[in-house]
Amino acid sequence: MRIKPQQLRAFLLDTGLVTKEQFEEAQKKAEKTNQKIGEILVLEGAISQEELIKLQAYILGIPFVNLEKEIVPPEVLKIIPEPIARSHNIVAFRKKGQDLEVAMLDPEDLRTIEFIKKKANLKILPRLTTSKSIKNVLRQYQKTLAAEFEEIIKKEAGMITPIKEEEVIEEKEELKKAAEELPVIKIVDTIIKHAILERASDIHIEPMEKEVLIRYRIDGILREVMHLPKEITSGVVARVKVLSNLKLDEHRLPQDGRFRIETEDYRYSIRVSVLPVFSGEKIVMRLLPETARAYTLERLGLGGEALEKIYGNLRKPIGMILVVGPTGCGKTTTLYSMLEILNTPAVNISTVEDPVEYLMPKINQTQVNPKIGLTFASGLRTLVRQDPDIIMVGEIRDAETTGLAINAALTGHQVLSTLHTTNASGAVPRLIDMKAEPFLISSTLNIILAQRLVRRLCKEKEKYTLKESELKNLEKYCDLDRVLKVLREEKMIKPEQSLQDIEFYRPKASKECSDGYKGRIGIFEVLPITESIKELIVKRATSNQIQAQARKEGMRTMVEDGFLKVAQGITSIEEVLRVIIE
Image (cartoon, rainbow, N blue to C red; front, top):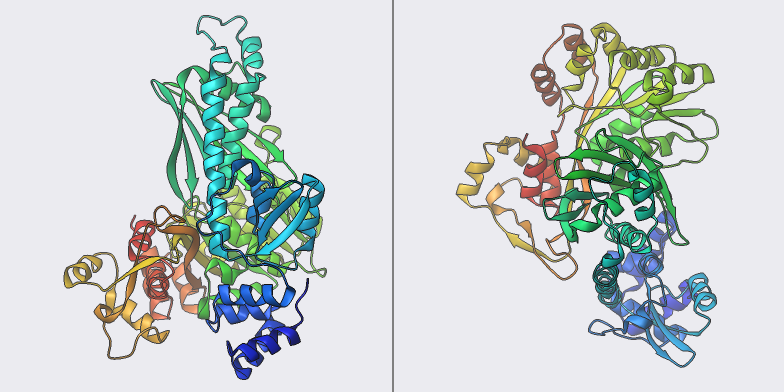
């Protein structure tokens, strides 16, 4: 079911949907980027996705269906597992006898059709449809999942044996028994499954006075998703402890563990933290997809001169590159993206991490384990003897690790690491505070990248222009003249225009995006260690002095980069200020 470029060209030109020049230009771009010609034409607005799919359906002789208002029976919907439906954009919508009608976006995805055929043991009748139709059907999975969860709680929670406080002697055995009860297993599995499907990065299970609150962190924001009856708390906590190989009868001390969850559709490593609180034990689970691939730096949000500076410093064989920012701002993801660029057969790359978040081929990744004495410092000391060209240290936390990382950079290695500071210039005083000598910092440090993550606006968004009162409020948080200068340099506005002439965007709630946001992107500031910055480091200058000099030399701050993304319609002013204001 493959459409040849010549066929597509003939039909597009015959129907008058695109011109010969548009098609040829798209063909050149498709060859360069390894994308399909149709995708390029849709991205550039030459044709709509619906027009393209209808044309593909006509060429291939496959019926086209519109499912934008279709309600699919749950028993038909469940024939294709949700992760498969989401990752391959294919849904089941009608079943007659042994015939199953499936709607899809990619007519060339024969492997998925074959997989569904074997799994369902039905005759598959493919249909082409639009992405809006697919999204409408995918939303219906969530209802099915919520209904499934309610059913478990209502029907089976009564079967769970609550643990009484006075049963101390046999508590361990009782907890083990509770953890193995079928309703508890179903509840924990459903919480995790739901979180994965919702793209959550963390699950919070929080005991309250009369119930247990379940929250997911999605795109950096915590959201309430469900409440559990108080009587099943002990069983749920015990189940998570059993999975993580933790002590069941330890309730006074914090515990850390991890476990893996693997299905045909996804593989996740789940990091578990258990903390005693007033009403019981709070659990936080960090979801780390093992099948995730490193993003490109461009996809993370880096561009222009900042990106060129990063690439330039990645080409240097020795020295240190630091990525800084608070917890959860995507520092490790950025490091992995850099390693992906550096990962060639000619170099030996070794890492010491806590935890190993993503497994990368041809890279030697070491997991920190303080219980047996394997810390960042001891791991790094050993790595240097492993003949590495490039070393990645997950985080510089103490004076010993700082000294070892600087020495590794001095002795001919390229070192990549992270640090917790609010901005790029704050990294230098932080290193000095951890007993690093200023002259050694100046001779080893190549570049500092500071970042935050802002939520992306959905396609449906609301246009508006800034009022005078809003501009006055913004002046408290950023230099508007600098922002205006950056926008002019990037040709986002004409020289005579002011900020009040620019159309900005606000989030707009929709069925697909309840709060108007979906996904995240980085905002950055890149501080290269130039000769003048080196002089300031040796003089033990403050972070403000280093920041001022870097700005004189053309460094764009995170606020300025954020406003650039706001003007492009990627995010909102509120989002940029939310992550920047300390």
